Image (cartoon, rainbow, N blue to C red; front, side, top):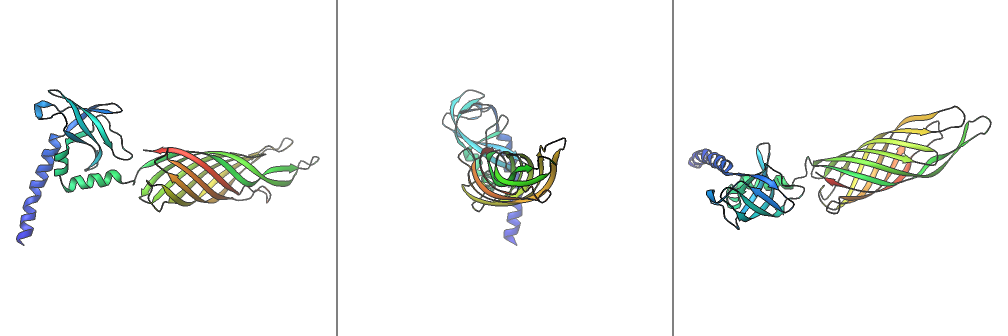
Length: 280
């Protein structure tokens, strides 16, 4: 009981200390690729060589963005060399700055901020994809007199895509992908929603596995005055390798099943893609 009373008595002291620490935080007033300008100077005890931690607010928490070391100090502002950036972060104007020893002295608050700065949950990404769809029946043959479709043959379609992703857990990522594939005679526009499981974590190099569903708009140019188009649903499975630290590169192989049109035009295919992008 005595320990509980002591702990409860310490809570207001901790909260007051955190509030004072926030009041003592400086602001980032200018940023270059290698330097950060802070509105803290000799008037409040700043000195050359001092280390400052750069923070941003995330709800009720502080997230560590980076670290700077002061290389020039005037009366009311300082210039710090950026010596560390947390993965996926950038230092921006109006972010907060606090002396390193004060930040570390905030104890559990510091540990929580560091953990959150490394978390991938909620982080977004995009990829530009280029590759080929193999085996889809995109070559069409027609009867020259009746202009009726008589046969289809498999071929290769070259494809481009844009994928937007968001990490919903450390090892799970939701994606929305737009693709356009151009085969011999059939053009395929697709919108796909899928989920990736990344065993090592979304921010780590390694393999991932995925699956999802999509809607395909197929269009072709039949002879005569006829028009050819159809909307079909489908699903896909994906296996890929990612390298987040190298232009966020991905290489993936997958299978896409597309519902047949008229029991002849079957755009189901095996596909290979190479992509690059970034996280933000």
